[in-house]
Amino acid sequence: MRRPLTVRRSVVAAIVFWPLALAAQQPERRELRGKLTVIQWPLVEIGGKRLYAAPGARIVNTNKLTLTPNMVAPDTRVTYELDGQGQIRVIRIAAP
Image (cartoon, rainbow, N blue to C red; front, side, top):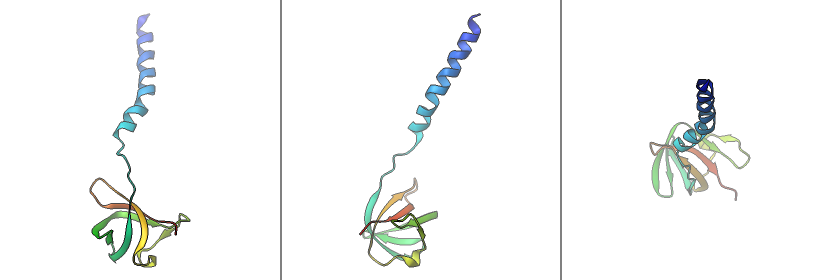
């Protein structure tokens, strides 16, 4: 009779601790700031550093609409996130 109780405890423990294990694996997101100038996509310059945009990177304006690189004026204030390889994952145009 003890066996079903052990199985139940294992299932409950898995349900409770699974989200915690997944949350621990997620990298912390940091939003960096700078002024964006598109050199030749995917090469951009932000804050004097030349960075590459990751495949599938997006440029998003304040209305959450996606922009193409030619629509962004030079020296536009932005916040951006880097992926694990140091490439830009998303660029958000900062509010004026």
